[in-house]
Image (cartoon, rainbow, N blue to C red; front, side):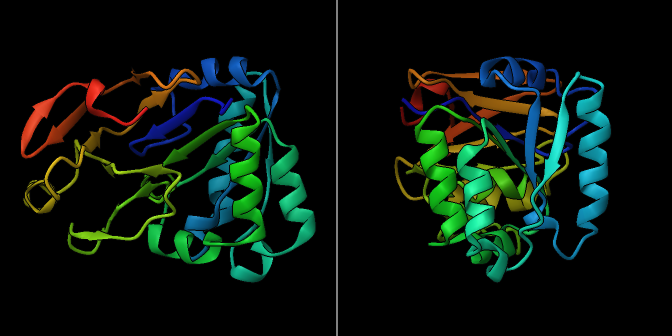
Length: 221
């Protein structure tokens, strides 16, 4: 059975992310494997330092896996570290870079296998966007191909700070019947192992289908 999956709207590893304690409990571990891949060109080591300080406050430790480029995503040692982890967290940055690094890679295959084996998986901002297919293209709000762990849904992160015009364009461009999940910063929409969905955190989550607000029941199980 797949493990819990948290899609975070951004602003990860901050005080308002109250859901992380529950994810640690569900993982049954005190170590979080952090992939700063999406931040490869935006101070990835600084992102790891932020994560480490934050999780220390929760009584946990961070193991950084510096998969920043395609060659690291194909290394057997990195794939093994992902496969053996019980809590994997992908941070924010560029979803397009993250996709290009992970798509069809050894690390991606290991991540999917670990999650299917019950590991907790969390992605924030870019790390959440890329798990969906289709994926929202941050350059203009249209759609592109994602990694497809979650098929037939798309995610808008930073919904409380995202351009209203771009968010509206994404919602208007969505194919008929496609759920668009708009998630505020420091907020998560969480898929439980039984396929049900819930929201936690400092902000709110809104789901749109055909331009109308609907409930979490519209999300794929």
